[in-house]
Length: 122
Image 1 (cartoon, one colour):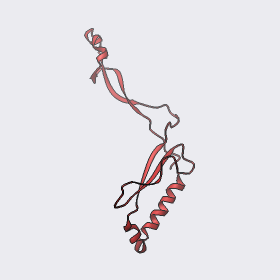
Image 2 (cartoon, helix red, strand yellow):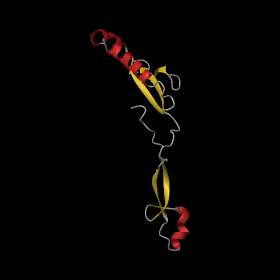
Image 3 (cartoon, helix red, strand yellow):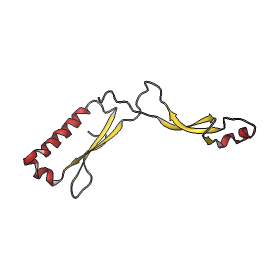
Image 4 (cartoon, one colour):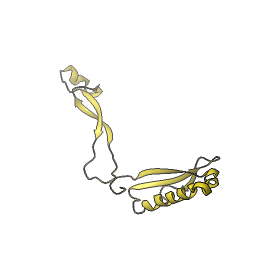
């Protein structure tokens, strides 16, 4: 799945020489002379097929590291499952640093951003 994902690097641009849309300020004189293609519209600039992804996708994984995770771990092993999930996430991105950049942060009752894995430093 990770290998097959491609970045969509579509950029919205003004498509000029349209017969309807927003009036193109640069074509006002042409409109006075009778030209019909004096409008512009917003459209997508499609990348070339097979083009290389320029920047990696940035993903943030947020983990609950509150004291309740440790407190209820004996009952339902939620902390153990979360740790296993973190390990699975880190192992799955090995070899994909050119395509993905990820960060793992945690939150508890006192702090909203505890960095475990920083972007670019897995």
